[in-house]
Length: 373
Image (cartoon, rainbow, N blue to C red; front, side, top):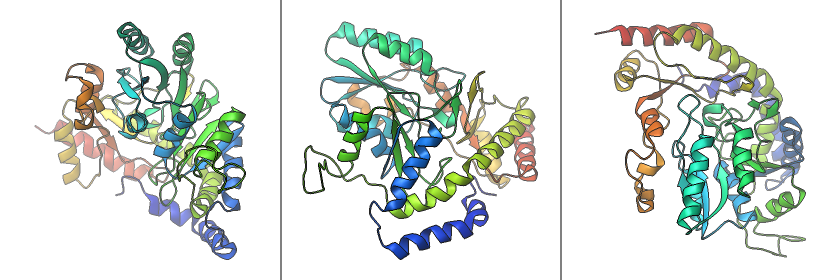
């Protein structure tokens, strides 16, 4: 049994993927070849924005808008501690200060009321400028962007949607990737839309921002790569990955539907055993992970491993407890919801090719382990 079955996906798409790779090998434009622009146009149309800018990773997709906005020393960037370190790491790389905000216990996403409190505290302290908030669409479920945008707008702050896990999800009729002033997604192989290596994209309706992003990702280029009008980075999306992603994007709507079916089956059968994920009215998750809560997490994980069922824990240690952020002065207990989730969460096998028989094995194993003395 696979936690995420990339082999099954490849078997279904092999002919088209091989043809796409052969096309790149034939034309030889391995850096910023035509497939990159073609993919960007297709992604922008799918998400419902004017611009999609491909880049080398989901981390760079977060970094590029912050660079384009001039975020740096003295700026406070608010985000959740219950996420992968990349979300806060890009803030630190630019010399800005991550300010952590606890999450909603039902959705695992940043709590708008807690955000308002955190901003007020930063303003009262007077040492940092509230500049930006990075909500994380955890496990494929968008954050509450209407509430978050209202808070951010009232303080003149930018919103950068971390949609690394939510490509394909919707929030009140709008696609993930279109919910902030800019959005970042990841094409890491395990993501809902995954490449065969690293990759990412930034989405925006802002023409000027898109132009700056296009420049920054190629060393700050102007009219050409030897006309450098700003300091940038090397963050180009590889042509081969773009070609593969074009094939996968065409298949993605069908895969997304199968994820919905698989998640519904899990929730129907697991509800009496563990705390199953909550999807509020008006939201559609892309189900990057199917994550449940249980007070017997370690017992369950060990029992499932013995039964041949793979699992994962995202994320066992919130960012405010990480050594890298010890200097920020946070303590255990500062973000109780995030800490509770980190101690109780476990993710079960989830992918578009998860058949009902395999899910039955997973659920039966969960029940057997939890009912055991």
